[in-house]
Length: 223
Image 1 (cartoon, one colour):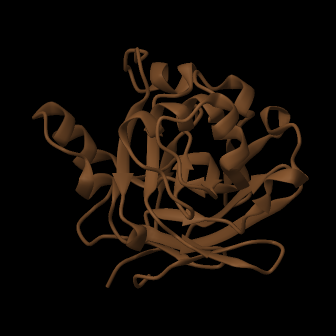
Image 2 (cartoon, rainbow, N blue to C red):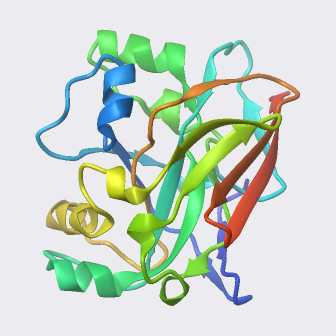
Image 3 (tube, rainbow, N blue to C red):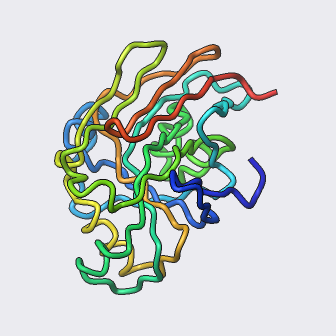
């Protein structure tokens, strides 16, 4: 996807995508399935805007990579500039929610962890950040109770509610704003629950956020 990716609102409006902030290990069950310790503060990494793709797109696994995994996540969309925000500021700044997938090259990530290197190649390659259309925040008054999940070829692999997160959406935004200046169009991938697993060429993926929005994608090897 070329630079200039537009977030699509269900209202028909669009918002240019800014920075993609991602949170690791924000669900205790997922940390356990990865044999990772629970963090004392949010684990943050970034994806470039050019990693995004949208509903109906294709997740393209880079050549010679055999171990791509899906990580479904609730995505919060920022609609205001924030720096050193309060929790009230953070809540007011969320203009919408989506379901996203943090596609991860697991072998590359494991090698990077082993050698203390960045995860950029494992996490930021083209099409590694599918994002559904955006549901306005006012349409979801109780986001903590709204189930999101992912299925591959009709089999459900991941499902959770944001209530299971270690840090809430608001708390994550407050934390990020202590280090970064958040801006309209930035998005926060808030972490994945347990059940991550492999994607292979030919897979059909469906991710959903309650009954308000869903996203469907194909999986193929990049040419």
